[in-house]
Image (cartoon, rainbow, N blue to C red; front, side, top):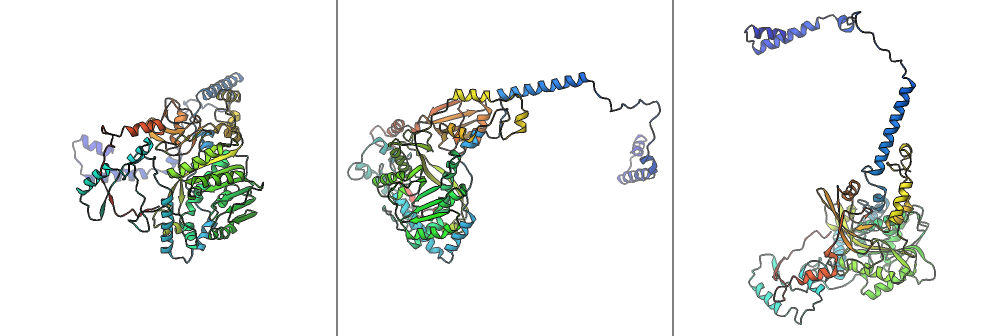
Length: 590
């Protein structure tokens, strides 16, 4: 570099290859320096300053002042935590109220047992039988019955208007005239949509044929199709509900279980997974002998001491079960009278907890809500979930309905039966959990806050030493029993939260029996805002919002008024038209 600078000062311009040669020469000169000069540098001159020794001990006054300053800083930090509090990655209350458990998979032993049971069966026959089962469900349980949804038929039904004789009268004639002006495209047909009349669903086995209400008797082929296509999702839903019961009742372990319409007994596997060694007796009831044969074959993989299967529910002879389950059975009964009679029988067999689960359709949600109101009318029970009160269902008479969703991992045999390439399935369901006895008294918020302040420790030393007993701000952690008592009044998210920039909107069912939209912002509280962004559909939420408004969508009078506003000046529904619908149905019936 020095040679290059001298050349530039002298006015010489070196070529690039000369630059490289000069750098190489400088490197060679450095390599010729003796190693002794690099390893043993020259000692410093004698005139340099003497080195300070590190063995000097500070005076006691300095140590005392440093110690007092450290204690002062710790006290100030602890006081700041008590007043503001850190933003935790989920509080104990939020973790206790969480319903979301992620994706559920069948136990490995059960999966292998079902695969062995289905080995050698015709896949085409399994597919056809599964479609027949789906047709029976779609014929009896309407996906969108009258009064539910935002369509004109639902609005007219909620207004209480009766249809005239002749399926629409002159309005139908006008629609037919409009239909004649439409020319159907290849592969399509023209369908007349008359307000107040919802056509029956089409068959999946024979497309183009309207379904009539019917049920199936589960023989050998129907049982095999049910086990291959339906059992994994049924198990996931029951597992989710029982997991919530285990969390809400930490000190209760059911010793005896009664499963009505048990099928292949997925409730037995879920109870064994959640209470290992706790369930001592299980009794399954199902009218299908083929279902009971499969249940007995798969029950060989369980560790329950006493397992019994029977075709009919025995009369109540004083032998009650700690936990009674009825999953996806009430909607299969033909009338509401038979459903209420069945509910009475199940409640008579219940010693502690009754669980009713059904499909997530509006009709099934109505049946579950009706059964809940019927049990509450006896005055001997209270609601544990999902509604945080013992008042009527807030979604009754509105376009919405209370339902939830659970994700399940599909085994290989389920993917083959459903002709699906995805190994993930989401199943919507409605449920209610009823317990005997009066509802526990509400926890006073003021006294709860005073007790929390009294439990604060003097310093953070104990909290850091025992994090399982103390919170980061120094307060004692609440026990599971305390959280269970407080959770009886927490609001429940009945829809997925709406997350926006800087705020979160959540539709919740409150303890007052109303559906409100709660808004959480950063300015209101960092902890509540953080927990609201992490909340999921179905969770119990302990925080209070910045603002709360009633949802008109879930108020029957407001819903009827909005439906009445959909009429024109002549009293006829607006936007009347003839609708085109494709002839081919979607192949994804999952």
